[in-house]
Image (cartoon, rainbow, N blue to C red; front, side, top):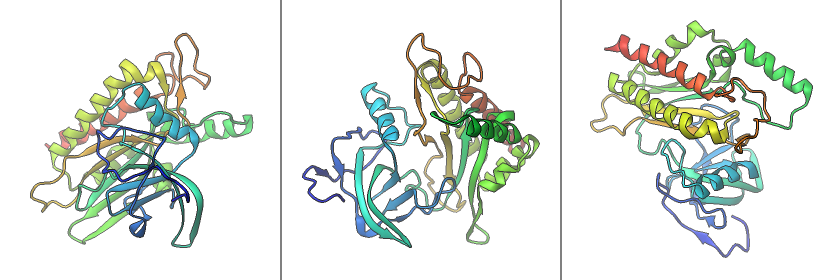
Length: 296
């Protein structure tokens, strides 16, 4: 924690915790480690502590997103709650962290014994600006070569609990890069192998709720570029009273804030779906529906 900080708060993070960027949050530093449940992104970006908090290394743009949520009264549960930030200086594994700002968030997996987690980068414009023409063309080529361009999303990682073997089956981002559209339903089936049909129905309900919010508010006011949907469920079938499945949107450093009458500055996918989020959510919902139907 930064030296000389007088305004430090110890808060239990829940879905209703308000965001306040002006305070520094207290964390059990002795228990901080790399997040075990991370399946997408670079190792070390996410840390966790035993007191139920996740720390994400962030930049000002991501803090601005949570400030935007607070200022506009947006409290939907598909955004992980965050009470504020902290500055961290410590050594974790072989990495030395010096005065890095971290966003303090609720630990989405804390309620689960053996969480199975699916990370899906959603939307058809996953890059932010400014961007060079050379990099833009590379990103467009990458989009068209993966399911991002064809389905509006790409699997970036999966971590499935295997109860019979008492270990996790982990698939990293390279798995999703090589999937064709017809390979995605079997991949979702693999992810949900230990899930009851009610879990799949819950994911469908949450996707439908998020889609409705995106139609009514999100696509009119925000552009999500490079954001991911996390699907989490209890992977251990023997748990008597499992935590309910959770769907959340994460990763907001390239979020675009739209003003009425202003054309999005990023390449538009469609006039009424400029970031391709609705396209991706719709295709995801259709696939989950098909997997649920096959399971019934």
